[in-house]
Length: 139
Image (tube, rainbow, N blue to C red; front, side, top):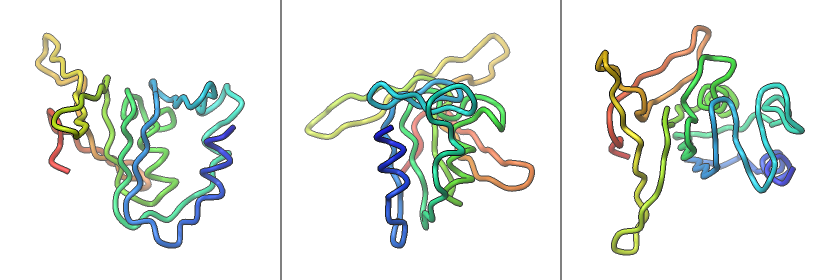
């Protein structure tokens, strides 16, 4: 409930970029014991107010870009923020090197040489749009 309260009271009059560091799963975000998803939790994405983000939204959660439209957290935030969302389709962990944190991705390639865990850029339009690239993007 804390995330819902803080998100909805967030002043979006001057948001250039938005950074979200949350635990996640396909179609889900987890924050302090609360789950946010599309249908079966105390908080659903429809409870979150739309926000105006002028730049990009960075979703640093596991599986934020996993799933089809309607069960994809990145596409949902692209719609809610009218911004391009950078998210990962697989697992994400963080390592601290020389005082800075860096995201590490769970990059796996299956037997068809399809990348199953990569960063992607999501934007929302009538048909949805997504673009993937392997490894960590250049922010």
